[in-house]
Amino acid sequence: MTFEQMWADLHPVGRSSSSGGYFRQPFSSAERECLAWFLEEAHRRELRVESDGFGNVVAWWDPPAPSATPGVLTGSHLDSVLDGGAYDGPLGVVSSLAAIDLMRERGVTPTRPVGVGAFVEEEGSRFGLACLGSRLATGVMGADRAAALTDPDGVRLGDAWDAAGLDPTTGSDLLAGVGCFVELHVEQGRDLVERERAVGAASMIWPHGRYRFDFTGQANHAGTTRMEDRVDPMLTYAATALAAAEQAGLAGQRATFGRLEVAPNGTNAIPSRVTAWLDARSGTDEGLAALLATIEERAHDRAASDGTSLSVTPESVSGAVAFDDDLTARIVAGHDWPVIPTMAGHDAGILAAAGVPTAMLFVRNPTGISHSPEESAPMADCLAGVEALADTLERLAG
Image (cartoon, rainbow, N blue to C red; front, top):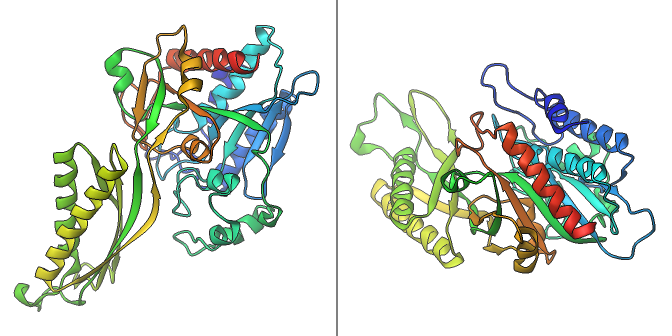
């Protein structure tokens, strides 16, 4: 089956008729439908499927004769952010299957296993922790801690596992036979557009973190309370968001408050509490720490002025990840693919940090927009990505 046909089959799953965006949250009906599609495609190609107790799946193309050489893993994820784009994640999975088809058409016989992986909950859109499936698969995070995570509706991940028929107590040895990992992904920026290249490779992932800011004040009447008598945590939050944007802009970094919870959340009530989540990113670990320290300092200064209180809790922090130089050099040799950094987190970063030699390929995104229905990639560039991945896998496993 061609890339175009697979993409057409997967394209409508979980898509909103109103916004055109995707809602493929982990263990939801749409995401499970995507997984069923993946398993069907693996079966169509007679690939050997392995899974773990967390929801991660790998479909293996085995060599004709047993090989003691560790396998080459590719793939990505099938889940999306809320109202997300079509390409972030699924492009890597569909391209991996299409790359195997292309290698077979070329008459390639692998001398080591080639796996196509689909990691669960890469976006962190339901249980709040990005790259959760790969963190569990690599042992970076324990099952007990993960099971206690809850979604916005209060559903525990442990209960979601039960409902999906998964048993996390079985652990995971899904990556035991993996010698290297190559993830293809749509670019989440405009670097390749500006370079006029359809395909590129990654040099590193910027360090990034997610932090919860709890602003506490005093609930009161919006009409009867004089402005000078208020203890309003919304004002402290608003000043903090502006300070974060200012500081990140001055330093060429990234700071985004993208999620907010307000209590009591009434139009005519001064809030008693505002909880906001900051996503911060920088080119270096030291830069990230300095950015957060400055934002915190500005927030505490404003809280003192407003009479509110503030606590800051890091929920996840990932240091800078440099991809394997030798593997990347081997992949790009003989091609005109630029090697560029990425500011977005990926499962590839988790595997690289866990000691698996890892590289990434990017496919051009003409809008530069991601995590949005406007995310895109021309079909010609997608097919160029399939060919680039097939060349890479053939070089590594052919």
